[in-house]
Amino acid sequence: PSSDSTLNAMASTAKVTAEIELEKLILGMDNKLDKIMLKLNIRQDDIHLQRIDENKLTKPTAGDTCRGSVVRKF
Image (cartoon, rainbow, N blue to C red):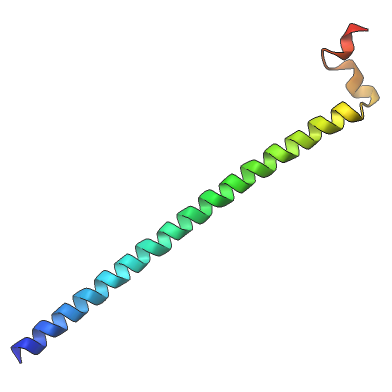
């Protein structure tokens, strides 16, 4: 009987440990996913800003020609 209770105690300890490790793993995955999403968002912002600059460079409108140091030289 004493060995049964010892085995039960060890089994429940192992179960709790496994649950804690699983929780850590899930939390770690969430953090990694958040970081990946953050990096993706930053990349998207960079690409978006780059596109805006390219549009200004390739298609200047009447309002944009007055701005910018290059155009002011005329």
